[in-house]
Image (tube, rainbow, N blue to C red; front, side):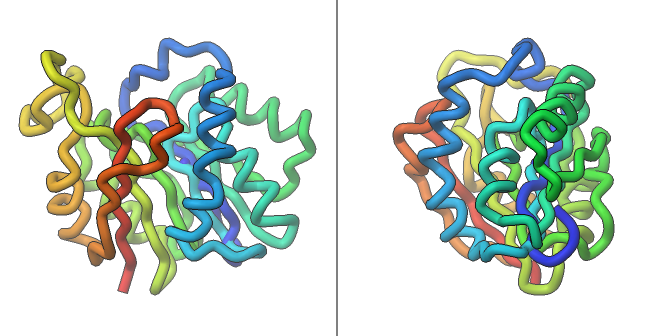
Length: 215
């Protein structure tokens, strides 16, 4: 996958996604979230008390860490479209007493985030599964405050793989080229920078980050 001041975590799974076969949080995801958090805080210019959305939050590794970092005065919106993921997110929020996290059921064509709610949005390892990215991108832009940032973390198309069902053929396989992310999201938000080698110790490997800002 965020609403009041700068909360922290917007999580929405927008389309059928390899992680949909997953049934619980993995140790690899927990480790990746811990490794990436300081870098995400810097890239998204996060401060305690902000509102952040974790889009495609899955089972909540990034949502949990963002929640703790952003603090009780912030807000984290965790959004997903998968029923198992949403159930796990809600259980984790209750079990760990994450009072600053709001779980939102997303949709294929919308984040379902409130307008102008977020200081920052993260969509990690999910953009390449979007079957209809244009309305989702407009939804990102609508949810961001002026000056708010969007980070797309994903991986390039893997050799000898097929594009997921329903996804645009120009992806070139399972994944998405960073230049396509720059072009598609850049139609609605300002491209800030691209980091070709993002967090080498994260899972999956060979990730990139593309950062955008709302003017």
